Length: 308
Length: 295
Image 1 (spheres, rainbow over the protein chains, first blue to last red):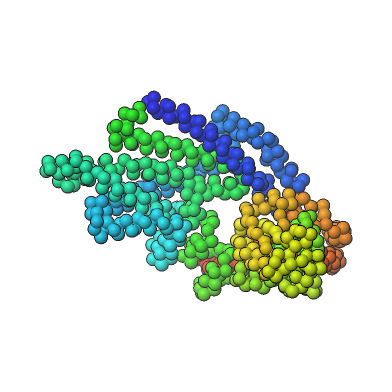
Image 2 (image 1 turned 180 degrees about the horizontal axis):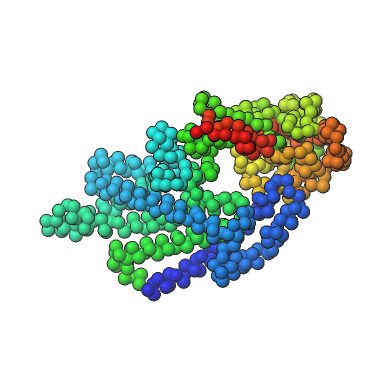
């Protein structure tokens, strides 16, 4: 409990720093929401009027202070400068899609990568091992915008098995999740393989075999649990990263997630939306990190005791 | 909403959407072969141009602007960057707006690299061919600013090679639109690849009027005679009279060369065969008032 409380306190400081950095970074970009809204033909006077309407004529620190005050006292992230809608509404609209896609991608990556890495480790040095590792190398090297379009070409246009775009049901989730999962599955497969190979060579595994345990019992009961500790970190990091949105995949598949909301807000210089999306993403990242640390503690009790 | 052009194309081919805008010449070539897809073109009230910062040396010299304009091969740009989708422009107004007149073609600074180099020599520059042009110890070079909107990168590359061919090296700087607008308002550029979209010939006042220098007149062009003609045109109710005023203004603008008009864009819309009656308006909006979709 003390550990969790300490983590919560330091997380608040991290969130404050993240929001300030995001605010300063957006402020340093040329142009503002008034330029984005008014377009190319607005006169200087029209732009000045619009800036006053949007509150952009206030000093940057005053704007940031007002944002923080709204967040702390009213849980209010403000309203979009471009559309006028409350930021919390915009974020909550997109959040389920982002969470759904992230969970699907990480689950798929864990299953594919875990299976592939385990098979490669148990059949180390064979053709199967070579093929799995070659596949992993490809998975890491191929960019998601390319693999996504290839999957659309194959499964949507040629085979007509899956829809191209949309977010109305499970069928729409498959291609974006597979696209996002592939690079992570490749990384997981390589990690699992090297982790299991390390564990397979240890004395306690040889002892387990000598005691007459079946290979299945040895792998499941002893090898996997110890070999998977680094994998939880990778999966946790990836989940945290994806919970902030996956802009490229969301763009390719038209998936209405947080990534596109945040990037479009950056293009529009929509301060409140950028801050809101960044804060939500950072919060989820910190939560996932906390869960990963707890999982580490369960997988390896030595880590759990040190942390507390 | 489907932001990616390749995904839009795939969605149309899969029958998940019925209408998409086409911006990629390769996609257009592919769709022309599909019998289930109909293509419609619309000329826009827009102009893509190469602008010069007339407030900054050496682009404040009309001869330099004219010389660089003569170096531009618009046909090459239309073919290589746009796949032929566009209308070669010779006037500051597109053909869809009052004030456009075919006779303005005789005032166009048509591609002529030899004339370009002769004008630079007349402007007091020495060098050219393998050596950079210089005047009073200053080399003739510059930064071509544009946005990262397609197909600007292809057009900018072609302009860069065309200017280099007459001995004027140019560096390309691509920023997002807001950053370009801010930079041009502050006069921090040399050459500008940009566009305007407006549905009235008063566009010339908005983008080239003296009272708009420092805001929408990004090239800082100022000609009191042009201003007077544009002000009169804004008040004139008789259509023929109004057109005449804008034609006179455009002759002066073409002579001063703050812009080299490049092309008028076409919007191409691809529609599935079951859609009937949809069309594209002059401002690039899809008009569905009379549209019907067969089941």
